[in-house]
Image (cartoon, rainbow, N blue to C red):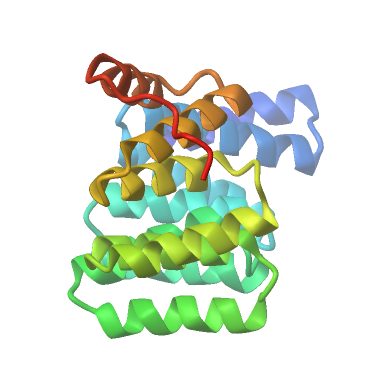
Length: 214
């Protein structure tokens, strides 16, 4: 069913004589704003309008998939994540969202196959190793998760997600001193990580110090 809100946007844009690209941007930005407000059905309509005008944009499929996730429509979300990955095979956000969706549906084998296929096709992609690390951490295999995260950092030492994830693994392995180093490094790269700041303060307040040289 066509939305009156979308019609109003169209009429306003037609009056301004905007280009197709500007129209896509307006729809997309409208969808992002509505998503932040929790208006997921309206956000879906805006993302769909943008997608119809620019069907090759992987980011639109990803955001539409996120919206379907929040609307509890996993089948549609999975389709959108797969469309995003088809157009951008190393899209880390879509890969992670799809992994989470599959695990929530108890489709562990599908999730593992998806990550293994990604690693095979993109053996030099740090995000693929990081996603595999997250998978094994979630399944409780911390040594294997640690190994994958270290491989990811060897390819991209500045990836804050991997730094933080490896830090949490080290803490579970009773090496909070190494966690301290990784959290500090992540904050040096991106100081606006409030959760990581809290973790760092928690470790310091518990008496954790930097590790001694081996």
